Image (cartoon, rainbow, N blue to C red):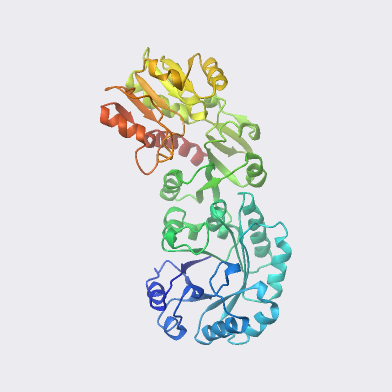
Length: 471
């Protein structure tokens, strides 16, 4: 597979400068000349330079070119005569245009493309066949993913092309299509695109070149690569891709860990149930994934929530590594007979409450939904309370099992004024690039603080052991 660096600049000089600064890790550089205001191809394409794909798209194809068909032909034919290694042409321009252009310079390889910025239509097989009939060196299909299951359509096309021994670039655009940019070679893709930085992306959902190489090791992935990943929504702030991929790289395992941004558990399992070897599972799927599993490990106990799935001998087995992680963090605090408050009623909060009760803590679950709060409290022999009652509750240990703190600029205040006291222990399940407001305030007051990253790393260590055993 080839790694193609994408370059988009508004001036010829800037485009040339970016081209010449392309890292050696890039096999090709795609120059989007439709964005250049003062295009001068002889200077842009003069040697020495890396090998290039010249692309000149109109607005309907995600570009800025507004000229006529004759002007389009003139520009691309000049690029070919100047030695451009590849030219990207759109299927919608017609076979007559493509055939005429291909005769300009037989040394230039042509890529026939189809783009759909609205959806991933189901009839892509016919589109692929139309692309193949152009007779170009390679074909390209890029569609917008509205659901993670759309990637499966692209992966099936890639496998078909590999069986037919044809070069194909197949990608899903958007956040829900990012996995296609990482896994394309696993299914037979010819190349994948990446900017130097994500804020320089030329298409929705592109990951940076460094991330593709350092985090995902895309150049090493093949048809035997085992798939692991985080199933949830949202997933973008998770550190799992860094943690688990480092483990795989350090142990030289042919495996990769991805973010599976899903909206519907049924559609995800229908598309990927035979594709993955292991999953981390986060909100909102910790409970709803259970009907799709063959067995539950005893670690799930009375939790009714799964945060880890591994496939062994064809069976999908659910585990919970949250609870042992919480127990490991709680034990040094001496929770026995202390008053512990757990905020939330989801899977993480359930693990917190269960761990606290096992260790002998007097535990109260605080939630917004009274019925769900009482059900959870009854299950773990805890007390139930509302957030309105929180100010009057005694507390030695506070555990946040809600998502509050994930979006600090928009999240509501989680605690009453003056609730936190010096030497109170605070454990937060939320983590990200910065400390959550809860953790920051607890530190200021002098609480014993265990931030979300510590909980993440504890449970991830347990997960990693299960993942490696599944290999």
